[in-house]
Amino acid sequence: MSLKKALLAATVLSLPVAAQAQPVSGLYVGAGVGANYRENVTSDIPATLGADRVHTRWGWAAVASIGWGFGNGIRAELEGNYRNNSIDRMRLGAVSGNPAGGTVHQYGLMGNAFYDLALGDVLGLGVSVTPYVGAGIGYAWNDYRKVIGRTSPTNRVMIDGNDGRFAYQGIAGVAFGLGAMMPGLSLTTEYRFFGTLDPSISSGNINNAGQTVVGLGSPASYRPTNYNHSILVGLRYAFNTPTPAPAPAPAAAPAPARTFLVFFDWDRADLTDRARQIIAEAANNARTVGSTRIEVSGHADRTGSAAYNQRLSVRRAEAVAAELVRRGIARNQITIQGFGFDRPLVPTAMGVREPQNRRVEIVLR
Image (cartoon, rainbow, N blue to C red):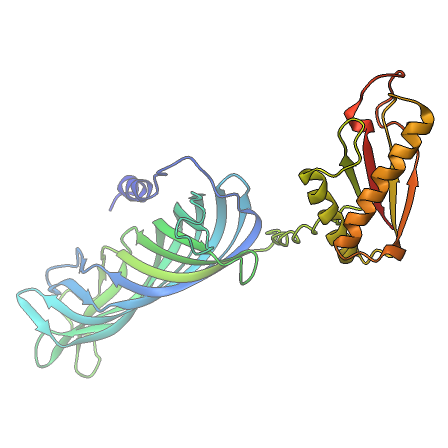
């Protein structure tokens, strides 16, 4: 397989699908483990040896990485990986389904780049969802350990050796934020396509005693293709993820009002329906705050004489006090005073009728 084709395969698998980034920032570590499928191998092994296809069983894969997030959705990391697949059978020329055994080990170092896409809590479960894509290049070793297939009752083909080659991979996955358990922790699920350039492994014919058979083209180089498909589940931890701010404390209930204003019609001291409602609120609040003294102060506007308005302000205060008593307030808790038109709420000239000055102030102490 050419280097150009290898890079193309990795690039296609790693194309970004959107432009919104998850701001992973700073140092992180990750690890994953899962299943690995190694495609059936074809090779250019010499025809004199006859082995042109090796079948492997499903195996397993593991990866571990350390990386850095740049805060804009882009991450870079260094990864170590390992894959293990046992041999199922070989196809040896026209002979297939023959007994075969052995193991193919792969291990390598990769440099990866990723792009994250933040979707937020799209599941409504309080878990952030972040799809990501990535690609990597590096170096990996193919280690064939006594891969042996029988060609006759007395002869076998053995492939046994190790060779390192340029490696490449494409990655697509989804991270599920577990910040409710631990800030910075994510569960990852991903697919990886992993391949190398064709390695060259020693091979040859041997007899049942393990001796090389002379004259059958042995030894030779076995040059298999190497494509892997891995499904992994893992964990990733970002070290500098800020701890979520605690939920704000419920706002304190507003303190009960301690001053109430009761207004009167011009030249009147009787209570309106609205005035009685305000006095009822004052009585209720007096009980709520545990008031021990209630000041009731009467006032008048600046129409009429000072003496007349003084008496009128006192009558207004007495009317309010009587209503407070009717609402359950003890009379000895109430003090009454009248100020006439000496303390206007709205300053006016003499003779001006000002509704806000015709009032009684109830103050809870």
